[in-house]
Amino acid sequence: MPTPLAEHTLSSLRRLVGAENVLTQTEDLIPYSFDGTAALQQMPAAVVFALTTEHVAAILKLANETRTPVVTRGSGTGLSGGSLPVPGGLVLCLVKMDRILELDRANLTLLVEAGATTQAVETAATGAGLFYPPDPGSMRISTLGGNVAENSGGLRGLKYGVTRNYVMGLEVVLPDGEVMWLGNKCVKDVAGFSLKDLFIGSEGTLGVITKVLLKLIPRPQTKRTMVATFSKMDQAAETVSAIIAAQIIPCTLEFLDRTTIGCVEDYAKIGLPLDCEALLLMETDGHPAVVAEEAAQMERICREHGCVEVRMAKDDAEATRLASARRTAFSALARVAPTTILEDVTVPRSELGGMVRFIEAVAKKHRLRIGTFGHFGDGNLHPTCLTNERNPDEMHRVEAAFREIFDEAIRLGGTITGEHGVGVAKKSILPKFAGPAQMRFMREVRRALDPNGVLNPGKMFEG
Image 1 (cartoon, rainbow, N blue to C red):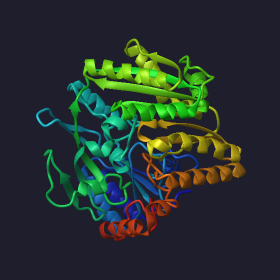
Image 2 (cartoon, helix red, strand yellow):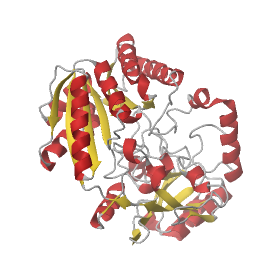
Image 3 (cartoon, rainbow, N blue to C red):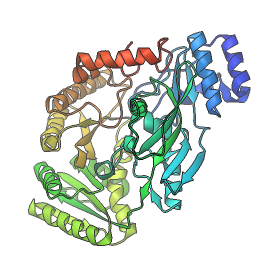
Image 4 (cartoon, rainbow, N blue to C red):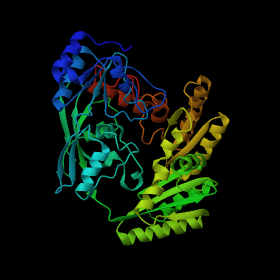
């Protein structure tokens, strides 16, 4: 049973947003008691839906006065427990603030509310003949506020960058209810601290993002998609390094290991060979002449590094089918076991082959089934454990295995998360990665903005 809020707090919330926008019944709270992170759940005391920035400001002011913990939530697709409720706390849900407010063709910007989905942004940009590149795997339902709070990545990150690279401005409500606008439509602006960058990736611990001003770019004229398979992991890793060394930056350069290939083929029936160790999904986009040249170069490089086969998409339909080999990887793996734990680590590209082999060795050592896929082009791997959270012994082995994987990523000069964030899942590991000076600085910034510890307490780090 959830810990109830004081009646005067609930009455104030109902008065602010309407009784229909405040949930307190247990059966209504259950969908908001977890996010996309496996094996984590906590019932909130209540859920409140904000419809305007003024609602958010009033809710946070009330929460500060009553010392009520607040966890902001969009669609709940996060993979580190960042939007997991806290005991006796309030879930502030922004999914009803989903309007696309302005598309400015002259300045190539799009102003949206935080509850707008990534797919809605992409659709609006496409309708104007423009392009919004960030494409997290959950883009059909993930919200822009969550994308910004987690600095989400995606398959196109190698060439186009991540969410941070497309945020020009933010409307943020501070923990005491004060509303602040950061940034503008100017391409150049160095007046004062870049405070918007402080809030990007802050995982809901510093303020609540209510509006986002996004940069759009011209849409690529064409693209070519291909899949290459390899009998050895090192061949795939060396191919990626050779493509980058040839000064080719594909928009997509993705990887699947043998376990993931088998699961994807069983799920999607794409026609992938099952006797290979690695698969690379490659996509180049831009001017037709450049695309044709880059596709030919990548095919040549793959063959020079011993690929078993290269399949070039003949049309858009086949390109979509080949791309589904990567985009369905998580869904395919999730069918295999009751619990699927999708993690992420990033290492320098030169360490990719060794890191994948290390993950395989750790899985064998701890008697686990781990499939690995990810963004080989930018060194971001997603080791995915197929397990059962009802088996305590196995979950203990899963925890030990991932701790070894994170330690190895740090040792290789990598990071403990490239996309999913710290949240609850990795806060015990963050100090080893960040070091005492960074941890002290982050705590001081957090205390300065939220001295009462109202926003997303217990996430990223304590205090």
